[in-house]
Length: 194
DNA sequence: AAACTCCCCAACCGCTTTCAT
DNA sequence: TATGAAAGCGGTTGGGGAGTT
Image (cartoon, rainbow, N blue to C red; front, side):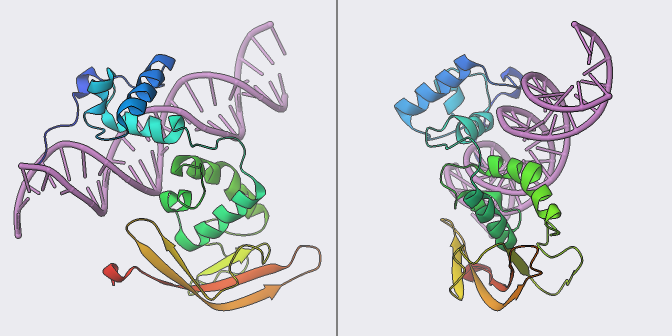
């Protein structure tokens, strides 16, 4: 029944990766590709569980990672996507080339949350803190320049597609701040979930 | 210079989904 | 179809560096 166990937990290292472990993992993946994480540690001569190897590769060692500071454009894109998708970090990461779900999650928790609160926006609901309305899915945008000019957008990865339809757009301005765009959205789940 | 606090982020934990048997 | 392990994901933690007292 089922598959065989993934690794012997009593013989696995934990904690920070050493340079030598990184090199072993990189060399192995260069030669054999990502393939099966279960068998990778043994094949690469690593005393780590497959799960740990996968995480290390995806979040730190992959050659296509961008790393470094997030740009203003990336900030706004993350905020907009979070307004649509919530804490679906892997879906959000899929829209930002060279960024990982872990990196975006950390960045959200350490920077963007504070940024939104300073703008008077609830980071979880994306609603104004002084204007809560539980019946509306609303997204606050700083400018009109982030691609929401059409009525309908699809957000998808390899296995799911959700559709967001704009039902109302309002603009408010108090002249001491940039214009505030509020976009109300109706989210339709993927067909196979309906 | 030492002690303390705060912040960042890599890595772990535990849950859910996917898939092999 | 049922079962259970692997893979994937989001939440959380803890080590270490930076800043402050």
